[in-house]
Image (cartoon, rainbow, N blue to C red; front, side):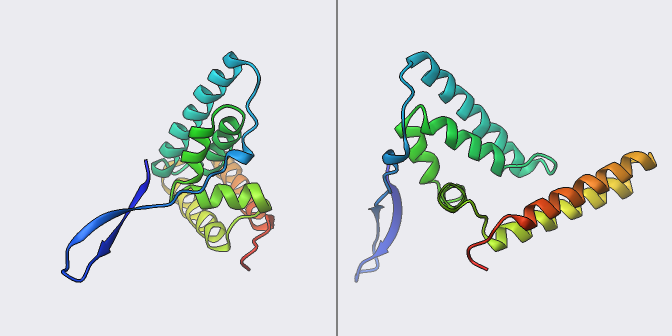
Length: 155
């Protein structure tokens, strides 16, 4: 189904006009086995569900699951792959990673900032054991450094 955008005419009527979608079928190389393709679609759909849950659950990351879903769909289904890459929220980040192995600077800073706030709140208010607090802090620092070292084309 095509995305819809609003267009105003001179009489101030509003009507929907389909916005063209990109076709990424040249990225898809289907596996020869039907059973494997079905398993990849199921695995990719599961990763999309977990990735969507990651939007609302602070500890669960979204992007890695969506990247795995894109990889699964690229070997299984043109339709699902195109739908994921044409998604206005997730498509640009997945394309940036697939084409350039980079993350947008703003996305990177947002991820590091939200992770820092979430881990800080967890350490201060919810974790009582000092060793676990130190482990959370070290994991947070490691992930922040790792994210920071991933290239950004827009910076």
